[in-house]
Length: 94
Image 1 (cartoon, rainbow, N blue to C red):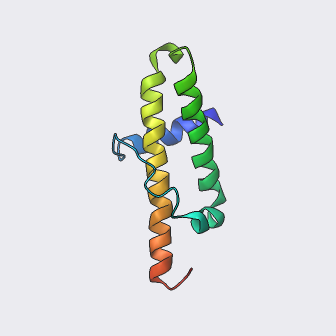
Image 2: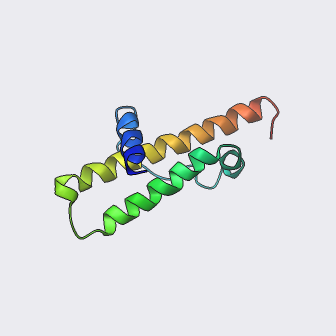
Image 3: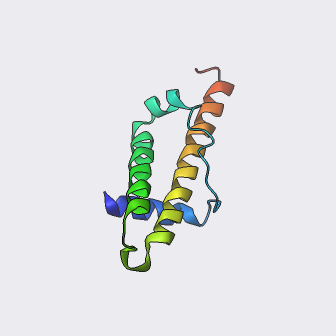
């Protein structure tokens, strides 16, 4: 699971903004239900970020960058769900 988190974070880092806020955390519950793997990835990344932030060590100098990449991945996953919600709404799907 750790490799998946790292790969996902690295893949989206080049496309993601450096500042992340949970813009769509309350607006996409239906999409989370329709895309459970993305919802699970969000949950796992949030857990990993919290763990890294609370950790007393710096993971060999990788802690700050890992947190930044994970937060960027979270932003992209939330944007993906928000996009799906908008696309579904435009098609008349709830």
